Amino acid sequence: MSNPLQQTIEALAKEKGIEPDVIVTAIEDAVLTASRKYYKSTENLRTKFNHETGQVELFSVRQIVEEVTDPLTEISLVEAQELYGDEAEVDMEIEFPKPTDVLGRIAAQTAKQVIFQKVREAERDNVYALYSDRVNEVINGTVKRFENGDIVVDAERVEALLPRREQSRAENYTTGDRIRAVIREVNKNTKGPQIILSRTDPTLMVKMFELVVTEIYDGTVNIRGEVREAG
Image (cartoon, rainbow, N blue to C red; front, top):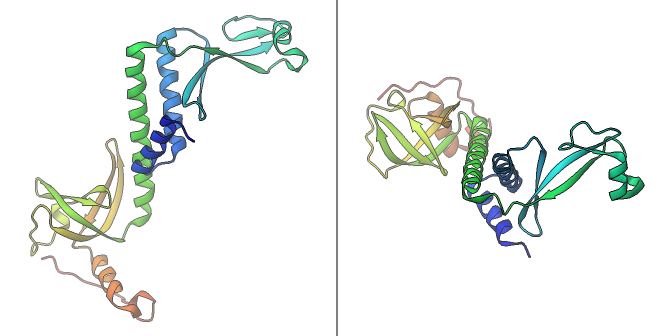
């Protein structure tokens, strides 16, 4: 049976639409960042998530060398062989466990911030990858709010934007109205992917016909040109 943290990771991954490994890596990176902040050392620190215990394990990694020049990152071959026998060889790495229960509240807060940031970035990348391949497809949504004449649409668990310039002058919407539009473009910016919709793009008319006319969808009939007057 999976441990509580593992269950939380799987639930969060499903909710955000990302792989569980992305969240595991975010947790490992978060503890690593917090550990470096706490220990303030030049040690080569490494973290690993133990799926059985649900704990993030912290290690100080040292490389086996003939002659030690930095005791924080290196260990002599002689000492390594005393610990691990003849299996220890030059250039191999040895992991020495370090406690994580001493990191404290500030470090925990740092870890929380890193996890949130990493998961947010992964979620944005996933949305962009999903919708950048859907340009010119029709999407259904609900009017969520209005921003300076633009309409923010709640569409398939993401927010999309129907700019004023892409709206038909003959149509009026209120919050909660159902809306169908074509994905015109998908842009990347610092706030995440921006999905631009259109109700005036001629592609919308073609796609709407495809939904109801089998001959157009299967290619028997081909629409060579389409014109939609604004409004």
